[in-house]
Image 1: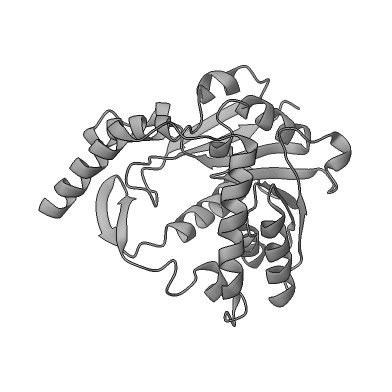
Image 2 (image 1 turned 90 degrees about the vertical axis):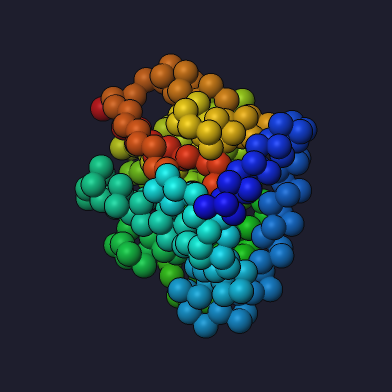
Amino acid sequence: MLENMRWLAKAAVVALVRPKEDRRKSAVLDEYSANWTALSRHLESCSSVEQWLRIKGVEDGVRFCNVAGRLERQAFDWQYFNRNKIVETLQREFPGARSVTEYGSGIGRNLLFLKQRMPEVQCYGYELCRPGVELAQAAASKFGLQVEYSQLDYVGAADSEYVFPDTDVAFTMYSLEQIPTANRTAVENIMRHVTRGSIHIEPVPENYPYTIRGLVGRLDHWKADYLSHFERNISSIELAAIKKERLDTAHNPLMFPTLYVFKKTC
């Protein structure tokens, strides 16, 4: 308990003094291209897709995290939690879906997980950073999973750059967070390329609880320049239904992500 209190006090001080971050496209490209390049060396040593989905010695360490609303220090597999949540939501909210596109697919592991669980579903991924696309393609090929990836800026791309067919459903996982001000445009572009709707797991600070950790998280993630005015922005989009659920579980102890389901007007 004392260790948790010390961590939270330190996090509050950091949130107060940290400068506002830069989420311009160029900054995101630089940050994530470096991240994906650094992970590429681990693919060769992974003999199974399960090993690739959670890299031993890199992603399985003990750390502070948010588990069911509690500040915990453990080796929690938050990636499995999110991926499983996407699959469960897809099966529940869009039964019979035959095709899925992930926007902001990173190095493609979310779609490899989905393809394993739902092999009958056609899977496509769009990613902003070329190193992520290349690594995703290499992994899909190595593990024999039929998933296709392509580079795309889904905020500013022309329709001709959407090289994959429109799919039944789309999803994002911590991708819209990188689009603080143009998130309405991003969602509209996604909805133009699906027939049924979309699923999103994203940190929306305005949905964080009014607890000490929730309030520190609101400040910290405002400084991080995550999604701004998201609720207002999506309310202005013509949709048949909007569902949301605060998950209270995340890799970041100050993060309380929201699961959204958007259904298109028929």
